[in-house]
Image (cartoon, rainbow over all chains, first blue to last red; front, side, top):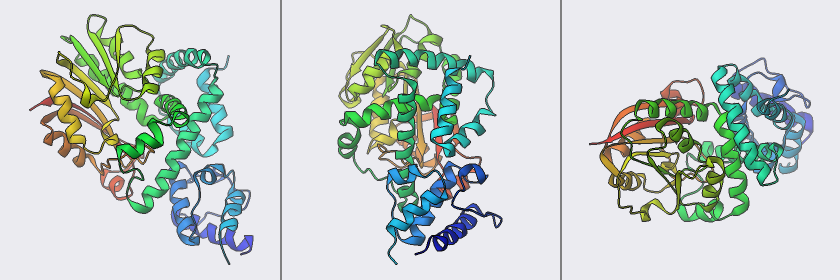
Amino acid sequence: MERNNILSQINKIFIDTLDDEGVVIEETTTATDVEEWDSLTHIMLVVAIEKHFKIRFSSKEIQSWNNVGEMINSVSAKIVD
Amino acid sequence: MKTTLTYIIEQIQIKNPLHSKRIQKNLKTFNQEYFDRAANFFLKYEVLLKNDNKSFDYAIDCYLQMLADFNFESVQFLKTGEYTSKSFEEVKERVYDNPDVMEYYMHGLLMSQFLLKQHYDILLWFNRIIGKNNKNIENYLEVGGGHGLYISEAIKIIGSNANYDLVDISKSSIEIAEKMIADDKVKMILSDVFEYFPAKKYDFITMGEVLEHVKEPIKLLQKLHALLSNNGKLIITTPTNAPAIDHIYLFKNADDIREVISEAGFNIEEELCIYSEDVSPEIAERFKISMMYAGVLVKK
């Protein structure tokens, strides 16, 4: 699956999970850029992303992402087209 | 000169910006008392670290590893509604008998006392309760004393005339408690509390965050009932919806906890519920948001 496609799907997950239609994420987006993205909503985002893409992240992966791009790397490595 | 707390916060900002947001939010709510207490605590902790040839960088990494475990467990918890560990034997193998895990877990818990708002709020509450009940205490017991912070506070408030015992099942915990307390007033007892049969009764017992680690919390409270003098008081703290690597018993709300307390033969003299997010109890239960419960219990 193309990265832009994954990004678009993850953006929608952010909107739904954070309940904010105005959220727009890019590969360089970090938690600092999105006010509602905190340690609690991060867990909710991970659960939603796992459910949507039918994948499972390891503890190391969940902790390792510095930005959305790194999150996409993990998703991309796990999904089967 | 930069304080230890400032350094810790700066490092967490670099290593975990997400968690740093939470810490920054909490710092805005703290008064000078917090900063004074934190300074004293980290001073003591620094001695422990140096004696083990370790630094605060190590302690910070331990804390962040503990958080990483909690985040992973939280994801599983949100999906299944259950804690991943099901038995004490499983947790013993996974955590308590695993020196590598215990090492970072204990240091992570120590750091969390002042980095997690819930833990600090409970510490303040504990100080207030001990202050109200510091008379006529001859024998004081802490069960699962872990890092030794609470019994240290109790000694400061109650004074040196009482006898202080600390029972813990974990050798690693006892070792850390010994170093943090650094006071020979406390008798350290390495034992499962179910196998502890002292000749005396205790006027005050503290058991912080242990109930959620056992399969049968009622039996544990019944054991404490037997150890407590008739007019004695028991302080417990335990969380709801808190998926840690060594939690077994899931309390979903405060009523679950109150039911267990009552079944074990106690009345609640005073209680406090601190939610990890600013939400109502109903929303907390619905979205499985953690709450820390603290209670002062007396025999029925």
